[in-house]
Amino acid sequence: MAIPQGSTTNNNVEMDPLYQARILLLAETAPPSGLIFRLQGSGAFLRTTSAMNDAFLLVAGWHPALLILHDWSARLAPWLMELSAYPACAGLPVLAIGMDGDANAMSALDAGASAYVSTPYSETLLLAQASALLKKNQHWKCLAVEQGSLIQVNPGSCRVWVNGEEIRLSRRLFRFLHYLALHPDRTFSSREIANVLTDGRSLIQENSVAAQVHRLRNCLEKVGAAEWLETVHGFGYRLSLPPKNAIDVNLS
Image (tube, rainbow, N blue to C red; front, side, top):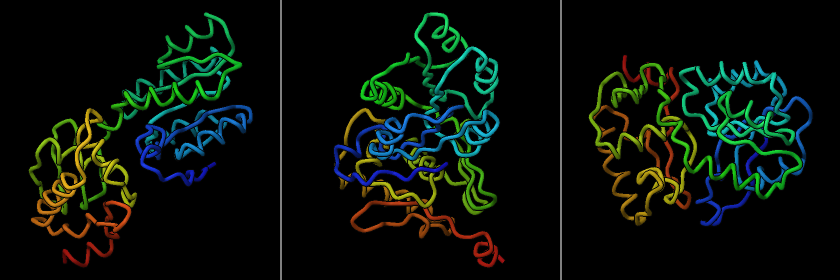
């Protein structure tokens, strides 16, 4: 079930790690409506499922930044250990929620959960825990991008191919393009881009963001892809990949 993002747009909200974060919620029973409402209100992109197999496919294909396991029980431990061993899930933060008790908490943490919250819980404190996990999350850095001949990003070798040609990028521009390529057609504000460029360690001025966008666009221009990096006036920037049939025509 996909739940639309909240409508909050002020700068403080944009700097919240929950804002526009992809969050997957696995709950065998109906998750509390209050929790969904608070996550939605924070601006998160939220999907929920009640099936472990569906959750596995969503983690592998949708690339959430945080996995929340509601109604934790020890029988979920083998599934979580298998999930944690999957290469595409390396470093994915997992927040488990279950009954109070050391045995429950230890079973979750031993299986690979990053944190455990016992019920009943405060939704405010739960969101604070989720924000803290997201703030430390480096999961996306390990994810490869493969969009046919359009774009390939290999984080292991720090190499990028666009339109079938390799382009050389600085560490900062590689990080920038990698993040955009993981979220094609999503518009990022200058503040969000600044957070990506600096790894969340500091803020840079808006004109500095524009300069990095200009440098990346110049690199893309060398392989005929400058127009992919779009300026959305009044909102920010996005990477829009052309349809496959369009690129086939251009390359023929």
